[in-house]
Image (tube, rainbow, N blue to C red; front, side, top):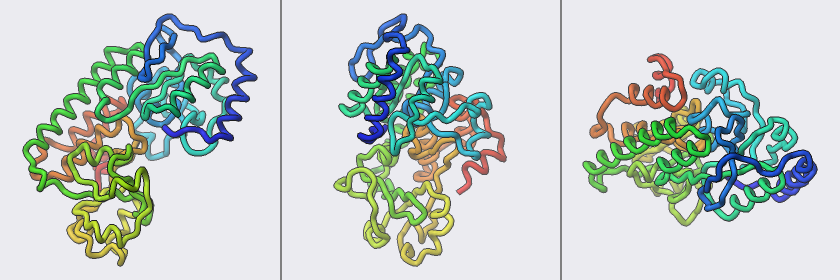
Length: 345
């Protein structure tokens, strides 16, 4: 979740002021408390829900796809085979949080949602934004903590908002098992045997998230050591010379062009990950395994990374595990050919 620019927020609030007179006051059949401690009145069984940002859209899709009024951005063509057809065909409405002025309030209000939800960072910025839009639009706007450590709890909380507690318990229990299995695996691997990792973004591979950032959270959760210094904060642009100095044992990339070309880039030669063929392209359909967005899709990323980083210690069949995740969370079980295409490096 990222805040709107001041210009976009001013325009959003102006539009909401005009629309507010035509909307009823906040209405609902039950009172809930969101991750910020705010009490909200929400419908007993919300049938039309808008996700404020991409992480919330993924979790809403996994929990209650029939309640989605649209996506924040249209799914890419390569994502469509892995999504339920009815949900995949929903319109792109824009986002309340994120880069750029993608929000079109007239379209949002025309979609007639009963509830707005967001999933991710909970901070004063997002609390203020949620409160302002809720007051002006007459719509309950709930925030759910999206940190990795809170994932099972966050799934259950969102499921409670959506009135699908049984579905929420199913997904939350899966998350708990996945995290417990990972911790059991890591207990067998000494710290000194855990690889150093560089997370490469962009076609040149020079954008990277620092330790502690939400984009790199999965690297740390899987027990690896992110080489990017924490001092850089968030996403940083570095030089190949800096990556040479860091000498990562593994490079994980989310960019197909970089993965295809890094072996031929002179400035990347000599880096242990490149020399030892340990540059891995993270799967990205229908959602990224690393972040893009940082939501429950990262559970599949934990499974994938455990096999890539600890090939001698990870157990079970990777394809079967990913197929199980997709069937449970996305409602689509990929066949062998689709899995091979998805997981191929």
